[in-house]
Length: 153
Image 1 (tube, rainbow, N blue to C red):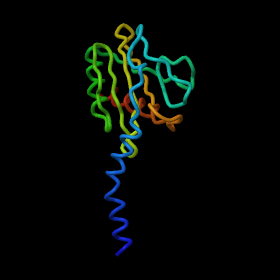
Image 2: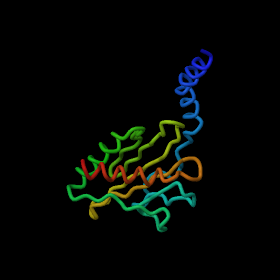
Image 3: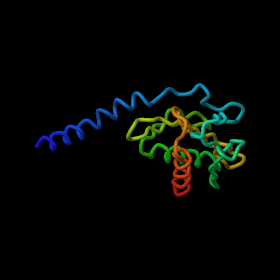
Image 4: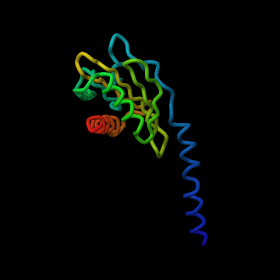
């Protein structure tokens, strides 16, 4: 009976722990968010960021490409991102989109940004963890999932 009560209390405390950790591990949005001269911020030296405009292979990831009208493609991107679990669209302004992705277990927040390059029929992307050093490929995997869902949309 004691074991059962201990397990029940542990399970019941998971949401409370997630809420506590979520506030501890959310971090703050970096001041480098946004577009400057048509470019997203470069990735820091840490291996927890990917960007289609990165100069180095460790951080570089392909941009999203589209064949339809630029405005339609960007609207499809916004819908695609908003449908992802843990995603929250923070800013959608013109050709720029910023979303926060919060992990379900510990509440870590990653910032994902997109900027439309209409003439090139390309959407550049940057996905970076706010906290920590490594992300174990989470940002790269997320961008690839977004790419896949965007292509299907």
